[in-house]
Image 1 (tube, rainbow, N blue to C red):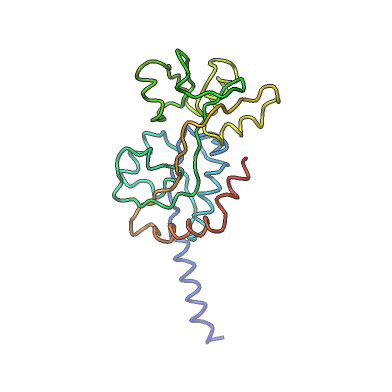
Image 2 (cartoon, rainbow, N blue to C red; image 1 turned 180 degrees about the vertical axis):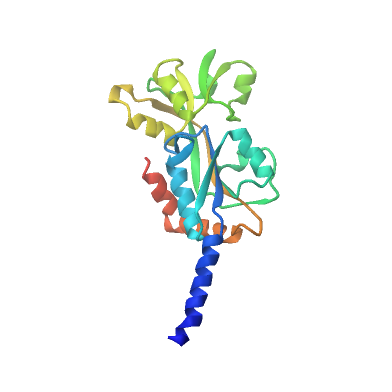
Length: 242
C-alpha cells in the first residue's frame, strides 16, 4: 500500500489541476438561428455551433462556456481578449486583423443563396426595384453595388429565421439565406409552402479564430480541429441538422 501512495498523490494532483482549468469562452452571435444555434432564455441550448464548441473543448480537456452577444459586441470582445474562440467566421467577414488570434483551417463552406417563394432560375443582378430580405448587420459584398445604386432595397430582420419567416409570409418575394438555414426552415413547411433556392450568391470558407495566450491551449485546439476534419467529425455534426 505505501508504494501506491506516490501514484495516488500524483493522480489527485492531476485531477485538481484539471478541475482548476477554467472553461474556454466561445462567442455566440445572437442573430444566429437554427440549425446554427437555438437560444432559450439567453442560453445556447442546441445546434451546430453548440455541438462544435462542446466537442472542441472536450478534445482539449476543458468545458465550453458559450457567451451570447450581439455581432458588434463580438468584435469588441475579440479586441479586448474576452473571447478565447470564435467559430463560424470567414476571413472575408472580419474587417480588421486580430493579432492575438490564430486562424484554424477552414472546416466547411457556407453557401449563401437567393431564396424565393416560386421556383425560377434568377441572379440577384436581374432584380429591379425589389425589396430583398437580409440580416441586420450582415455584409453581402456581391450585392453592395446593387444596394448602393438602389436597384435593390435592403430590408433587414434581426435573425436569419426572421428573414425567412417574412419571405414565407410574402412580405417580399426574395431574400438572402445561407443554405443550411433554408434547408432547416423548409423542414418545418408543408410541401406547397417550401421556399426555393434560385441561385448561389456567395461561398465562403468557414473557420475558427483562437486566442493565442498562455491560458488558452491554442496549439492543442488547432491540432484538434485538424484531427476532427480528417476524421469527418465536422461533416457528421452538420449532417445531424440537414
